[in-house]
Length: 379
Image 1 (cartoon, rainbow, N blue to C red):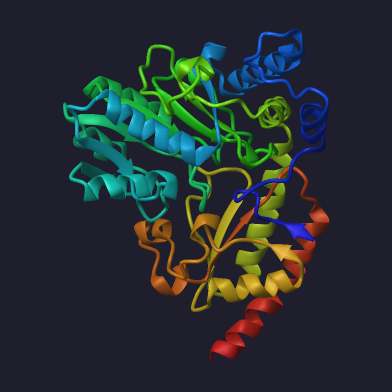
Image 2 (image 1 turned 60 degrees about the horizontal axis):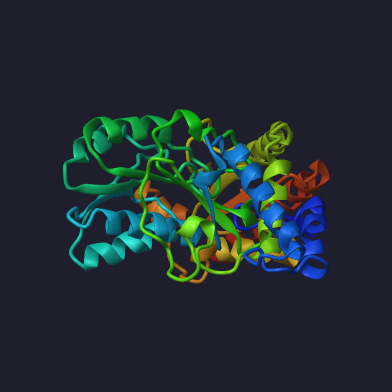
């Protein structure tokens, strides 16, 4: 099998699996218990918190709160900010956010909140003047992703946070789910208040993530119950998941493998664009993640291309994995004003740390024939 869908999820790294195992078998004590048997689980939580803080460049481990993943972290950031600022009813976000942000904002809009949807250009890039012009005293939170999950395009969130703080008292949240482990993140020297991550995007298990909450920020609690996570998120901690997240954070803080991933991505993308007529890259060529390539094949159906690759045991995506069953053009590509004839034939290749050059060569060998055959059928 060739797995080129690492923006959807990643395999658990062997080191991560080994770090998790003792907490599934030997050290199962409740970390809130007073007896010494629980010291191993308590230590594992704080060690993992320290590793995640280092990965994100946080000032303090107290700024890291463990969650079930990116969706919970995104939801909590927005709803928690609105709870803390009940007199404010304006939210600013972009048209290309992940569903975990976009659908929350759609629900808020249906319930009477004012939502400003920032546009992107044909390359998927954001104009910060649009953000500046949208800010007012009624804005409770601005939520902008760092890296788009479908195109890999990066947003200038550090500069955006500075604009938000200069022109309002709003909270600034970043969905960093698809960026962490692929590009450097250093929150210490930013005005970012909240930052979401999800472990399964960087070789940790599914079901674990974190929300960075800057020390000076007040955020309404996510759940009511015990005093876990500094009273911010109740519930007995999933120690094995947290241990896995911590080990993955330590592993992926090393970004040296990204240079090789970028080379492989560029080889794959460049040869496809050169060899296959009526193919085009979606998203800016330079300002994007090193692993992601979104390519459209005009007048074809992306699901048909995916099925042909699947027959060869090659895993890719037609966009966000959360979108796969809607059978409609991606909202991200719509926002970029990609013509329907191209948007419906888009495929996302997202490479990871375990991909090899021979896998790229295999896909390059078969892609031209796949596209030629499908075009023959459609004519």
